[in-house]
Image (cartoon, rainbow, N blue to C red):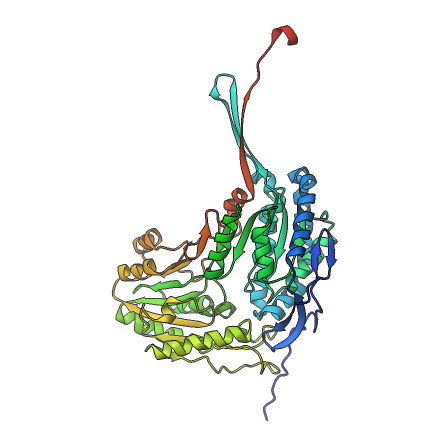
Amino acid sequence: MTTTEPIVLIPEFKAHYGSTPNYINGEFVPSESTRILPIENPATGKEIGSVPLSTASEVDKAALAAQAAFDSWRRVPPQTRVQYLYKMKAAMEARFEDLVRVVTQEHGKTYEEAQGDVSRGIEHLEVACGMPSLLMGYNLEDGAAPGIDEEMIRQPLGVFACIAPFNFPMMVPFWFWPYAIAAGNTYIVKPSEQAPISQRMVFELLDEIGLPAGVMNMVNGDKEVVDALLHHPLIKGISFVGSTHVGHYVYHEGAKHKKRVQAQAGAKNHLVVMPDAVLEKASQNWINSFFGCAGERCLAGSVLVCVGDEVHAQASAAFKERAAQVTVGYGLDERVGMGPVISAKAKERILGLIEKGIEEGATLLLDGRSPEVVTPGCEEGYFIGPTIFDNVTPDMTIAQEEIFGPVACIMKVDTLDEALKIIEESPFGNAASIYTQDGFTARKFKYEADAGNIGINIGVPAAMAYFPFAGRKDSFFGDLHGMGRDAIDFFTDKKVVVNRWIWDSKTMGTWS
């Protein structure tokens, strides 16, 4: 007689989180809005809290508080400002597992993926702690003429804000605000209304470490809050991560209202497989690239481009075999390799695109529309299993549109140049990867692929915190990207000072 091992889930942090407040001028305050949105656990479909869709007047209060705090905060020496980041790092590390569980509940990530979401946020605190060095300008003696020195200094501008996405609810705001406040600015965060709970916990920790009132503020909401941020005269710059359609709107509206804008937008990322690729290792890498975070990330693999008939046959078989083994369920179930998509609406849209792929003639190699969900109690969750289409052509809808779900497309081409042309003709330019053991081929791809983030035998070419998160074409609107040195330039303005001191012997005596 066989026995079945009991299923043990990692405990939820809370069953219900109540209503998420705003945080303005150092205080948690309930919203004055009567519009309330439920927050759902996408693995169960059950409500775990609610979030107010705040008003423009609440954005105004946050902006006024941030502006009032700016004058004194910018005068705090940078080496003192970053002490708050050190404290925040310690506070987050002490609450690490709690934060991870919340991210899993509100978003649907696996526990391991949620650990990465929180860890990456902490990494940005670490990098921003170097701001006393990163803020340094430069100078040149006699730079203009004998006796005339010239120097460049960096100065903060005032109030900045970010409009955050749902897919990395913890990490993405950390791409921006640690650098902004360490540079002497003040800040407003608008979390995603679909996953705001982890940011509420972040602000609880900011409150605990004693960050001065007004330096950091949070306003929950939807388009009304977004528009209020874009139009507010006190806000100097906006950082956005999300879809291309909304990113273009944010960029246009923000620029129209004289703001600095960095808008990281959508993607359709191609992974090219060469004949010399090590398929055993590469195919495992594809699973994380295409199906990690249920495909809900802008660096996710979208199209596997196989160079040659033999590569196509071997790669598609290996990919299907590995993808079929992915276990689907609740992220707090440690047996699970992939969680749900964020909402019923997202699931419906993705299923519609799968139907479109079938209608347009692609071969459904692996059908994830009715996956086996291994975790009990998740029958109402928003699950789609790994799905693979073969014989996809560039003109198909599934080859052109960002699906933002666990759906992979496979194409076959005869040469690397054909693969590069497909990448070039895509309206998106977020990421592209190649699998090869040949240095010349890798360099050609790195040099010619028309995308901002390039992977060589890496399916998710995610920049570390000290490099910028690149992107081009319809994947990015702006001049300066998030993270890295670009963050320093975005959150400061350069002031050039030309000095000449004239010695007056009548008033200052003899210079000896």
